[in-house]
Image 1 (cartoon, helix red, strand yellow):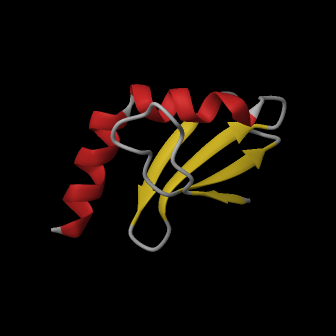
Image 2 (cartoon, rainbow, N blue to C red):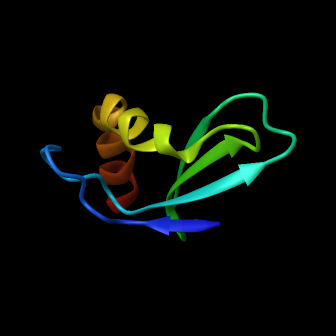
Length: 72
């Protein structure tokens, strides 16, 4: 697992802190927001993690909605 929270240049607002996990069984990318761990990105083992920032930027509205829902 890799913990990422570094802001990328040019992204506004910066990406939320997230954990990247690789799975040999995963067929596709999965985004999960959990109370204990926050945002988890599950990638198929063959996928390059360089795609994660663009993926998170594309799904930012959904991610923010899920995080706010957990906060109560």
